[in-house]
Picture 1 (tube, rainbow, N blue to C red):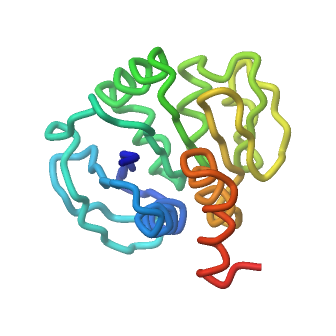
Picture 2: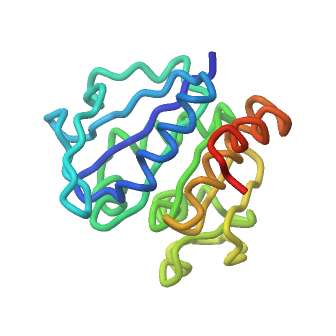
Length: 182
């Protein structure tokens, strides 16, 4: 079963975190929400409190198929400052494990030079944080093991792109139809 680890920091964008969690669980993926703080309850950018499944220090990354970073401010900068998470991102990238980031969160990948020479996108205004990337401004970019998304408005499309990568286009299309997506 595909295992995706969704990382939550204070100030995360709720739509960008929770819509993918819902869609990926509908797809049958094993999805865990991970708080990078010392408590399970994490406050979103719009004051929605979410109780994560696990704390970062309790999380096993050995069987992860994907690490996901939602945007939001200051959520993305809080994720970027977490040294333990940075180490996991770099280690998983070295193993060619998929890493997804949306909105402001691609800045984390840029700061760690994981976008050098790769097409990438992000929320407008964060382009300069994508160090070495070929910024496209497209809604979604997939290059190798890295998937980036522009913002909250493309969250459904972003989550379904991940479904497509793991379960194929037909499965993703059928899932979208079940959710009444056009």
